[in-house]
Image 1 (cartoon, rainbow, N blue to C red):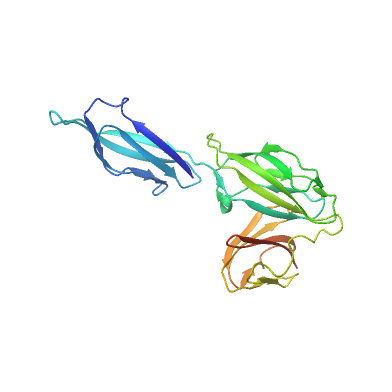
Image 2: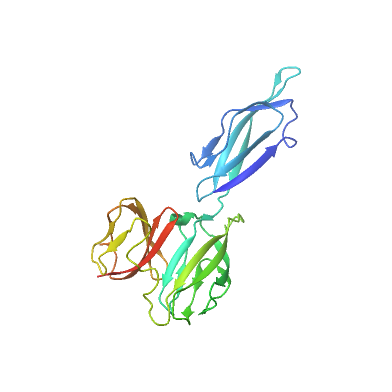
Length: 265
């Protein structure tokens, strides 16, 4: 999503006022904020592109001179509003020594084509090695090693920038790295939140079941952080189409979040 504030007056034909009907968005509905105007001294507005692609808004404007009633010929204003990347925070869980490489897509928010990223990393416990600040078309960390005996988190603060030069708000990637003693010790408790949500069985072949009385947001990643599934469920999630392997499930209920590692047989 991107927001453009504009105002046109001096560059158009001299007139006492301008009037225009509702502008036309292409694609339809991609840009919001365009409104009609009557007898205005300038053409202005605040436009928002709610898509991940460039879009245009076209105004057909009638100039007039209120003093003598003369009306000029209509003219056209076409405004291009480029998208601004707006990406949700991301949560990953890794075994000790693992790597990740994340390329956000629209499931994380609004991600235009060609976004590049610049990031800095903070080790909250000062026990992880291998992390580096960086930039590129994806966010990555190689051979992240936890030297402690318990789970530890890295927080990547990422600034996204589109190919059109629109800079989005920073987002974070929180990476939980398992301890040197056991790579399966992080975020794997079966009782979650105040509703005691339970996910089972593990390993599984077709479905992951949830014992929950509320709707849950469930996101599934592979071990490299690639998004595979994003659904809202209350009782079960179909993973039958996934290949055999290890996957990370994020379970979200409002502000509460839990990360689980599952094995698909």
